[in-house]
Length: 180
Image (cartoon, rainbow, N blue to C red):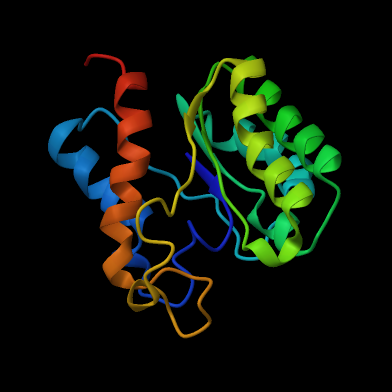
């Protein structure tokens, strides 16, 4: 199950072209014993995710949770400690429900100041270490500085970037998939 925000909800592009749909297609080819549920909501924050995780886990009972939240917390300048607490709660509930977790990290533009941006980025590694989860350090690695791979808002990746995002996720996810 993918539990994220607009980056996972295929904001601004056709749903079938987003990285989550590409993941679903890849799993159908390589690991047909897995299916993908996309429980992502554009604009969601860690707080919103924390408030809906229990019901979502009960509904879908995922073997693996790909947690891609926090970007909107950062873009809104919300307290990092609050984001970490919310993400930690989501991870704990997922693990308690028996799901293996992939935490997806994010970085912020430098205009938020070095203290905030460094603490924001470090939060994901800290959480992964504390909760012993797999980590994708930065979903937009290797293309965040390439405007041609973004929509006109310069925030949301374009269709051409979706396979790159899937590659980032796959590196952390593949080891968590149990043998059929």
